[in-house]
Amino acid sequence: MKFRITRNWSEIETALSARVTKDRAGRWFVSFTRPASKLERSATDKAVGLDMGVTHTAAMSDGQFLDMPELLSKGERQRKRRLQRKLARQTKGSKRRNQTKLAIAKISTREKDRRKDWIEKATTKLVRNYDLIAIEDLKIKNMTRSAKGTVERPGKNVAQKSGLNRVILSQGWGLFRKRLTDKANGATTPVEIVFVNPAYTSMRCSECGHAEQENRKSQAVFACTNCGHTDNADLNAAKNILAAGHAVSGRGGTSHAKPDRVKHSDPTKRQPARAA
Ligand SMILES: [Zn+2]
Image 1 (cartoon, rainbow, N blue to C red):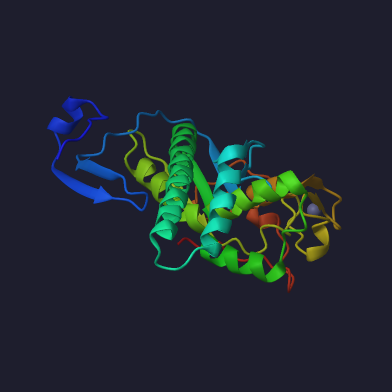
Image 2 (cartoon, helix red, strand yellow; image 1 turned 30 degrees about the vertical axis):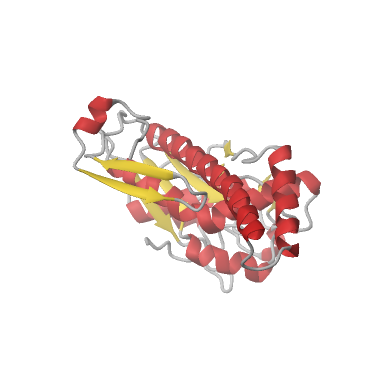
């Protein structure tokens, strides 16, 4: 079989094994396994907490946001919808239906490739910049989110964006987490990844530790009923995640939400952070 080499030959020469695969869009791949190269970084003495959300892909405790761009162009999205409608009308098992299926798969794999590419870039940036990264254990979070229905009728553009971010939360999270830990483990200077229990992170005040549902004024606004602290709701959650991460790693740190300042009153008691 003929194939096109898309990587340097010198990289391939050191390969340990090769694997031939075919994806749903009918594309063939030859992939070579070789020892992973180490991610070059030096210590930054910086730590960050990440809140994976729907309005932003992730909010970072230091005030930045990670936003995955639209993965398909407007034309590609329209074409995909047209094809899906066509598919619904076509006879099952027919040749034409299979052609439509393949055309849809081609668009979907493009979408998937772009998502992967974004995850690669985002995780490299994170591992380069932070010595400690605290992230939520999303298995728990997905359950709490769907039960509470925190996604409130977003506007048209927001709907599209939050759709993207829901995909990251459900399907992309595993890959995001894997790439982040792989890169952290393979970095020239170590990076600690801490998984924390996300319970109460969205309703607890990162300043005083007071936790109740009333603190969460809306999807976007956090306002503490105890101390009056106001913040972007996702940033407030990211700060709590960082604090929980510090508590788990035992490094101490510079977060506002120091565990010893948190009140312990039921049902708003602080949940001990738990590593995955
Ligand atoms: Zn407060």
